[in-house]
Structures are given as C-alpha cells and as structure tokens.
Image (cartoon, rainbow, N blue to C red; front, side, top):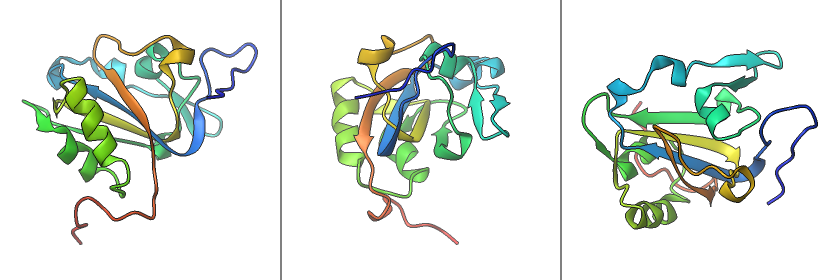
Length: 151
C-alpha cells in the first residue's frame, strides 16, 4: 500500500484504481450532526473534505466516487445497503465476511469510496464516533449488479 502524502497537506491520498473502501455505522443516523458530512470543496469542485474525511485522515475524496446509503430510522442489512448503491457484485462476498466478523451485518449507514484503498496501517484510524472502517476490497465494474436496476 503506497498512499501519497503531499508535503504541507493533511492526510493521505489513498487513490487506487479498482478498489472500494467501505465504512459503516450502527449509530442512529438522526443523531449524526449534519456538519459531519458537510463538504468543503476544492480543485474546481472535484475534491472535497468534511469532518468524516478529516477524522480518517483522508487528504480529500472525490464526491463522484462516493456512494452512501442507509436508514433514517432503524437499521438495514449491509448487503442490501451496499448492493443498492453499487453497480458491481464483485466485492460483496468478501464484504459480508468482514461484516460478520465485526458483527456489522445490520447498519444504519454505509459509505463506499470507489477508486480508493484506505489503510488503517497508514492512517492509524479505524473508527471515529460515528463510522467504522470495514475494509478495502477489489472492485470489478464489469461484474454483474447485485440487484436489477429498475428503469
């Protein structure tokens, strides 16, 4: 894992093709402050930071490569949450294995950051008050969808 850290910049650049990094929460969504996800943009509005990315020491993330899903009340099955906002089933079995090991099969919220391979080893952060890093997985965008896309 070779994340870049630019001199004078906070955090790491975990950009890596064909990877998806996944964070989950079991914290009630309504109790997460709006400011946690509020984005500050840079680089012609293609890059963003927020409290979440700062907490996990991400230098930035590209909102176009991020998908989120969850339940405003209660919990949702992680497979359903991930499958509904991903166009590939390529990483779902490994994700489910990791979720079972960490007892995170039911979540309130999920964040998928595509084209990123987050590393706890480099950042030193695996969770904050609201989110827990579940893992970075190989992602194949040519694999079948987990769910049929409704038109």
